[in-house]
Image: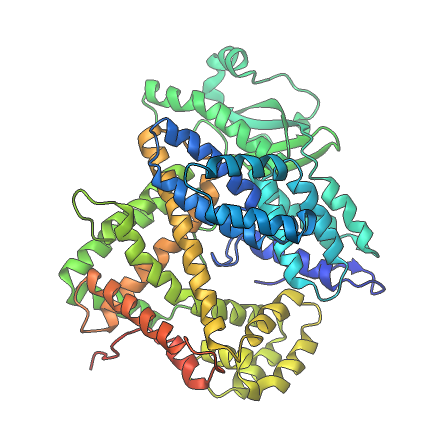
Length: 581
């Protein structure tokens, strides 16, 4: 990812923390960021809400009670690690509350959650903002800023602001403006005050709908009389201009609201009239009535924003090996993978995220062995968790390699690769980040990265763990646990859509995480079946990865320095390494 750099920031204030803040939000919301780096779905406050809302569903018999235990486990973990709450409630209070959450009886934890929610929820956003302001001004508080961002951004998204708006507002309000003091960022935070603004959303419908204008006006409050702004819009041939008036938090949520409202009519109209013709032009305009600024945005959903992950670096030989290797040697595996790929490609084409979500979840059920009468989720957990854990470090170092390539001068990046003798780019970058013999090279390149605090912090965070293999590998264990909690959440989402017809507000975000998991499992199967002749079935791939992770856990269970040989084993992708002749 090419990081944002300040356009007109003064050099006379400690801007490193603010630049880290900007670049981290950019990474969290960038469509092609890895799942590891994306915006978190929950913080402590939103987990409290999720637990209580799920409890109501359990009482109705809609959701199994086992789901509450999973959310409660995640909530306890989030609460114990929440530096914002520790800052405002104090160490002693947090210690007592954490102990109560960890040891309270099953019949008591509901009252504990209600009690904590009453304390935390009303003030959490304010505390998050104040915490960020305090630490952004300090030169070396990157860890605190990271914690603050994760809490603040998941809170404002949960409460209604769109990720697209946040992303663009960071660039407009911080990156491109003149900033001479940390205090200049107050205006940025003030925008997220949850006061709705008045918007007009302009759409263009087919002229063939002219006989239904009175119905649309009466039923949907869709307006057709020119309000003086029609001339600002490029009206297309055979189209009728119209607009809605809404109060929303931002212009992106306004246009989503407009599409959802008009699509109710068009969906039934297409059914009754038996037409497949699109009745709505794909672009619209949103007028902010407060600023008189007009935004031109897509109207019709395009599915998951990050579903077309960039894979420009895949070699033709790799594609050839996967396609021919799987198809030629593995009947059962090829058949399952072929079905999964069909579902995957269908998900890409779906306009509505809920439809794409169901297709993606179906892939996990196709690939993971299901037993009659048993939990549908457990086989998926058994299959995918080792794969995600095994992929963790490869993803981390590949992301750093891409960021170095995208942000350094080309000659500096090439010199770095040429200086480090290793069999692959990912190994070169791992050596660069971890091994002590490259310490002077790291220091030299950190000077070249003076405007890249996020990238420096990523590299330094890994370097700090160089003397403790156990703590280093624990990063992948923590990630695995996060994925496990999230898969339970995705399963609840799947059941909500399929059985109750209820689509969660954040199905877009949830689907993008699901897509990452699906890609990982499909690539693992395709790669291993095509390159390892001992593996004959999809199930054997899962067994191999599970054994491989166990082997790595044993290797990295000792509190000693990471060696070059350790890094080679870290990126080994087969438990038994016997390849085709």
